[in-house]
Length: 106
Image (cartoon, rainbow, N blue to C red; front, side):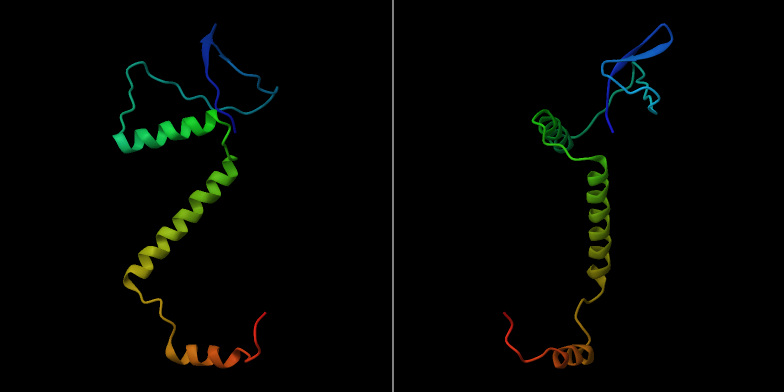
């Protein structure tokens, strides 16, 4: 995935980068009156993200989505374990302990 900028010239979008023939694109049109307002914390995160990109510290969209999914799973587990015990049932713990051999581990 790429993000490119451009302008409409003669009714066509002209971008500032090479795009292969036939590639699918999505165009986001900015209305001249729209603004994006963020708090200081989000602004700092966005500025650091831009700086990382400029330094070439990037990851693929797929990897980014995987990270977001992992965070969602972790957040959901945190919700569950905020109200549920994560302690193993004593009977199951006893069975598990008996199933482990007494050999020394290397």
